Image 1 (cartoon, helix red, strand yellow):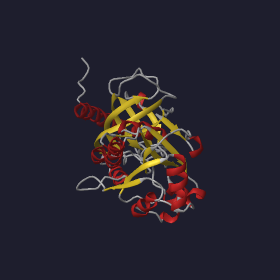
Image 2: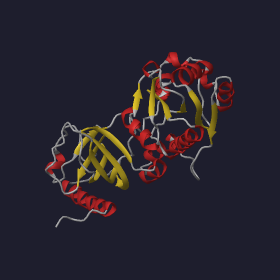
Image 3: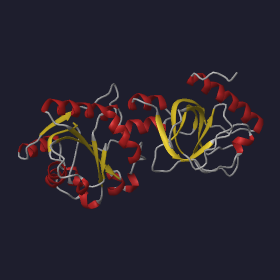
Image 4: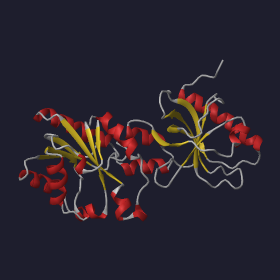
Length: 317
């Protein structure tokens, strides 16, 4: 797969393409539905390349940063998900206020026609583009008639709740990671580099890999979850984990919100500075404040037992 970070980076000899356009945040089942249809159209009209156009940063982060939603996937995580969905190449448009001011006609001419030589464009039925979102699917279809490409708008998928990035964020904010999984087609995951914490978990017998959360990436509601930890520096299979999200209210002074993953039955992992992915399978409980360390440790033992049960991980012999 090729990833282009600007229109200028697209090779002149690309040939005709089928293009799909969107933020694709999360690459959820609704996005996958559109991409699948783009691949079908490519086969029908004899085009070799399906190209996804996405944006970095999210347009709202540029136009109304105070209202920008936390992202479900970074661009780096989004690209392999798009590839797995069937896309051949990705154009990441560096979104700016200048591009936001483009007319719908300029957007079509510079990106779809001049850069990508589109023969067909497949988008969601609610797709909008150009200055003040003035362009819609009927306008895109009309512009294509004069620029030698056809347009197909795909009805939103899902049910009874339409799958969308907003819906998934709402699931996460409620701690409903199972609902997020249903809409994504896979467990929701956060990525980051493991940092040194206060080592309190190790002292309690449950050493954790600490991944800071930021306002730029969505994380589930505070609580304890069953899930998996996977190293991103190569090779390792996902490891079963009990995961805490929050600020650890039992101990005074803990105010930094973070994801802490205890890999079941492992105290030998050296993960400081290692990029990891932590995925969430099921919510076990909400975040609690304990009156004693003994009460905390007993509850953590129960969390591990339930995580083992959810993940189908037997106790070590």
